[in-house]
Each structure stands twice: as C-alpha cells, then as structure tokens.
Image (cartoon, rainbow, N blue to C red):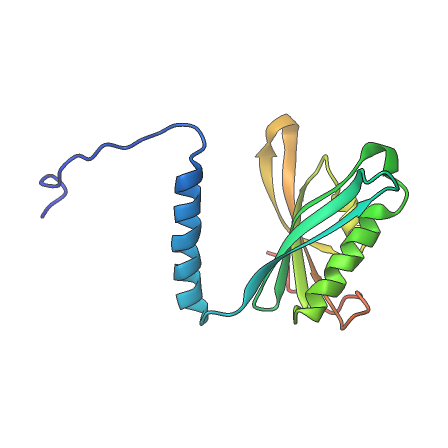
Length: 158
C-alpha cells in the first residue's frame, strides 16, 4: 500500500491525557527493556519534614542499569541556604550507590540551580538553549565513587 492509498485516520490533539501517558510509558519501558536486556530500574525519593510535619524539601529520582536520574529537588524558600538541598542530594546519591549505581545525572534550568549541582561535584555535559526568558536547560553528570559521593573522570562533553 502506498502513502496515497493509506486511509486518513483521525488524530486527537489536546491537553494532557493521563491514559495516553501511562500507555506510552508502558510501551517505551517494554521497548527499552528489550533493547537493554531488561536491567533493573526503580524509583526513589527522599524527604525531610519539620517538627510540625510540614515539608522542608524533597527529591525524586529513578535508577536504571547503574545510572541514577534526579527528577525533582525542591527546598521550601524559608529553608533555602540551610544545607537541605545538599543533604537531600547526598542521601539520594548514597541510596543510588546502595542500589548499584555508579553515576548520576540531572538537568536544571539556568534560573534554577546548575551552580548548586556544580558545587556538589556535578559537571555540565550539555545545554539546550531557547527556554523562556532567554534561559537554557543545563544537563549535569557525576560519577559516584563508592559511598563517598566524590567524582572520578567524567565523559567528554559534547
């Protein structure tokens, strides 16, 4: 059948579709598992609360085949500068090492915290310009050395 002979099918364009997101995640996970030999993957989180049970900050990440990917790290405004971000990150790195990871990656917009990650031993390995307000999305990478959280040689930047 040629392209001209194929029927025109409806295409839905709209807002967020949770069912579609779930389906795409399942399909891509299956594809990725087949391509990578089904290496173990998981989710992890770290959070800290104050005496009243209110969230001070938290971190979410994933692990997959020796790599940890930091998804979200947030500290409430009144607690920023108190070292919570670094402590959350160190706890996640330690858990990643415990799970067999030897490297970690994160992205941060230029108006967020790339300098924070660099102070924690991460190195910039790429950036995507053109974010709103003239900003960029910065990709950072760190090789974990055992449970010390220090770095070894990083891959060459693009």
